[in-house]
Length: 443
Ligand code: DOR
Image 1 (spheres, rainbow, N blue to C red):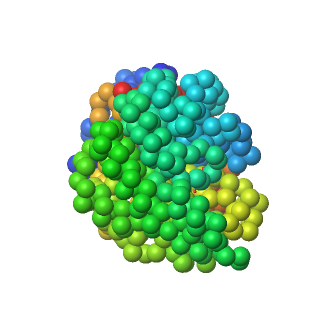
Image 2: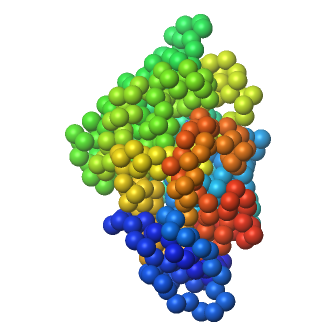
Image 3: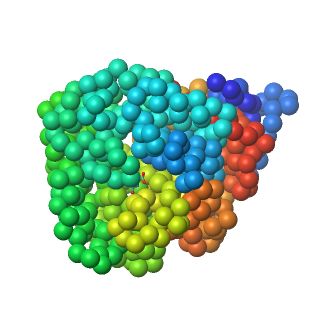
């Protein structure tokens, strides 16, 4: 792994235990020491943090970067640049590309496409199908593979494992945790078939209703328990699923994740303000769901945040519902939104590290990432809490070019992102170090 020397001087370092005034000394890409007024070898490059907050680099465990096949929406370079611009130094990328990532060869193709072009470290999910279900145990050992992803309900692309028999084959093949998009395909089909003419995006939360999500999640938990296979519930969207997770008490067998969209937007207002730009699967729902998800993130029922960064072009989004594609870009806005949560008192600064760094690192067994401490990769982000916004469209680096959060007043913005000692992004521009992303290691 390539790494550089750097002293990040005079910041306030955020960890799981709190915030402390400290320098961070990175040597050959790894954290060497964290502490006040560190002595470093002459000639070590210095990044002045000047009392600003310093977080370990965020890990976004759910992004769709569209390469290969849909590079007009995003590619590995533009997607990881948006990540770096938001203080995200590691991403796990989803398999619903064209072609979908369903074989070791296709996964290797992504790893090789990423070489020398990316601004964050990266791992790739394999997509489960009826065809590869029994071979996933062998496939998931491929270097750069973070695990297997199952779509229980259709979303963007055609990856799908709708039935329990195939899902059980997937869960019985391999040992690593399996990520699941949990909406029930059979109920989705019934509901789309019965859609009255003129249905608008405002009805999206009823079209893909609470029962779609709850039914699939119940089935998934039953099968996880029966097979003993660890699963990870992606983008939980309902208060009912939170109640179910609490009631079933499955511990580490089932971990779960939430998006910033489900934490910060709510129906019907988001559809009135943003139309199909707020359309995603599973849908953003009424405020009671948002409030239950916030409480579940704060109390640890939800293990981590994933943006589900899902870019589509504005022209594609402008198609009439339901032909308008689902998905909202978001890898760049996780940290700024979490700073609003801290300002508003429903999360604390150490929670940001828990849900965006140590949580995802633990769920996916990501090596050498985590809290800023001796030996981990020197990945960090410096935040200027004086930046109060409004969030400007020109700051966005995703090819999608929009966000439902443009115009929001901020409580801080990432001003420098460091990947293994290299400044990869600073002050709204690519850092001198250029594209330094490498493939993640899992264990
Ligand atoms: O809204 C979504 N968009 N949900 C998904 O599960 C997939 C994603 C995409 O790839 O566009």
